[in-house]
Image (cartoon, rainbow, N blue to C red; front, side, top):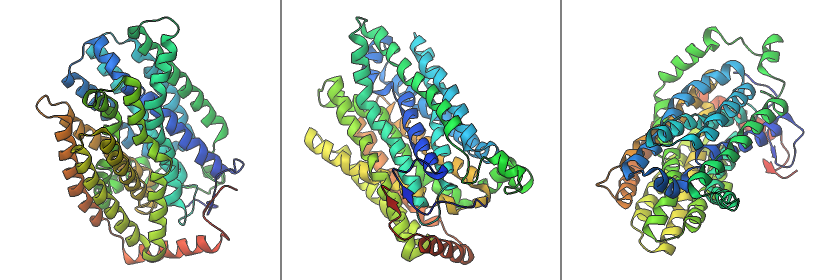
Length: 449
């Protein structure tokens, strides 16, 4: 996909250009999606008592919340190639708001499980966010743009842990009981999701020079058929071993983050004898690291590319993944609250930098099938969360043991990063494009102007 007039600088306080509007709208939409996707997680102690859920049943709902996202992410990537990220995001946000508000109607484990399964589709928003920034920004800043938009979106995993208990407390002040309070609290993120969908439709555009239908009408973008069709793009991506290597890598970083988002509050609540609000605040610190950690992963990816090209991006991904696995193993062994929090923050730093490093590579794997590649790799994150979920539904494994085994798996998965290689022609072409983009900008790639 040959998109012209990509931005070679990120001007954070500029809302006028289509590139920066897409940047801000995409990260904000993804951020809001976390409120719907994981809004129930910090309230699970209340839900557990209300619905009488066992540990195994809670584990099954965790798996359900991320399982359906695997399929939807695969579909949403190729859908972006066809209808554009603007319409794809609008439909996802508006339709996704329905099960978020509807989860309050659950009165049994089965209905609660189905609601969490339906809500999981919202997680596909990540693929649209990465797709949109990938076609809006030049090679010299695309790693930073992807990492920052996704990181600020993932930040919703932290703010959700902090704000949803406060929303729940505010609802309780109306005089309702806890059983009705958690249900009413989930209406709030549902409404916000619907409004965000409308905002995306009216304020964003697909590419720097217009929406996809306009570009195709002007002959500036090939029709979504033939070699540029959904089926062909998906087939090409599926046959590329690099795509599946990144699938496994992303399963071991974003999949781990999703798992921690689901269990962190109840983990600290049960293991350190904390209140629900305090456990939510501590769990929120893990997600709040996204305000800068994933951006650092993208910045380092772009910096490694300056001297090492695409090989440099791959080397940085391997380093970040290896450090993530080691930090997770240490976190699993912490029994003192202060040490657990400190190591959790170190682990959070590397897991999110690894995510940024992964999508610092994705835009260069296959530009003709960008949506399919982004969709498959993005789906890997949720596939990893599903696999990890089985560790935490077992009645025979403690959470600490599950986290330790997960850390070992991350270290093994880090080796897959080394399977991502590019031809000499591709490396030369991307290095020239990188240097050209750098040559066309007079100052730092990331600024507030």
